[in-house]
Image (cartoon, rainbow, N blue to C red):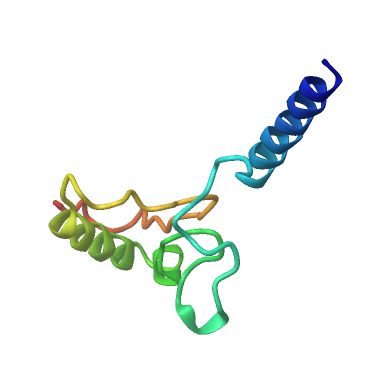
Length: 93
């Protein structure tokens, strides 16, 4: 009886250790703090230019539309503040 309780306790400790080792979900495809020369906005998959120019944002969107398929991973947008140009004429994508 004592031996079976020890085995059961050891199994419970192992199970708890395995669960703790697998971590908690919520991974992302972007690097939290990309290198300064990467050209990406921190915490996102977006180039810095999409925050600086409406035309750069439109060009990036067109590129992504052309390259997107059912098998590509979604882009991480995070808290990026995308550029807008209120004076430009509407452009088709």
